[in-house]
Length: 139
Length: 195
Image (cartoon, rainbow over all chains, first blue to last red; front, side, top):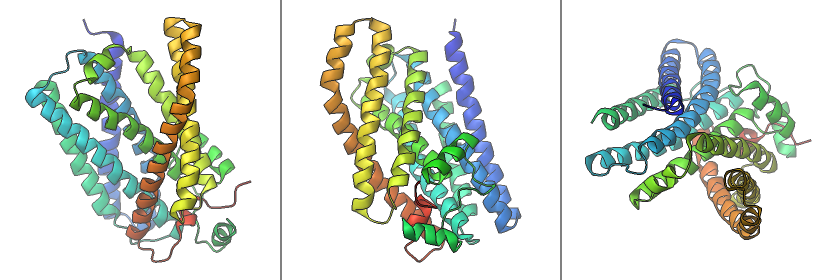
């Protein structure tokens, strides 16, 4: 039987990814359709939620790995894990640049910030992370 | 600092009081208190905490040491330690952002190393509390405190300096992507002189 704490960790992990990916898709859509001022307001609010979700994802991701300890698999499963962790690191750095862009654009009231591309790229990367998570969960 | 305040008066610097701050209300209040942009402080703290976990997990898995390490940590303990690291990093990042103008390498890295050392020592104290609660061996905790203090300060300082350089590059990249040509790094890091 799976302990309650592991179920909670998995639930939090999924919820955090839903917030991160769903919020990215929403921010991308708003940056495409709304005026620059509205897009920047939504982006500012989204970035706070995104980083909260990403923190929870990292925290619960390690918790998920802990459920497999001590025999964490290697081989193809391990290669998928390494790819996922590497991609997560890339998402972390890329998202920090994206948020810094939002902060700088907001500070200058700059309407030309490339938010649409940034959110599209983030969404693609997060979909890839979800795909790798699916491979890790089900092979 | 004076330039940052002047820019704020001209409407060029970062506003920390707008309705679109994005960070939590608590973060906003703390950010206002320290003079750092609350969204930037929240972002960098979350970025640092997540990187400090994901990077080592990747390395530990590569050397086949992850399983044995995770086996020794209970889920609740692990979550608690991560939360402690996150909160601690958020607090020190606010202080660091308030202490730097994000204009030059030296002015950014030195406070980064200082607050990184404080983060390292602070996290060691959290670890010692956890160890003390789990093993209930005061002598072991005292020995770890004495031996671990300089090590954690050094490791924290190195990590803080490294993150400061990375953050400087990230903020600069964000500024360029936002379309700014002028060197306005200070306006990103803080919007007004610290009180």
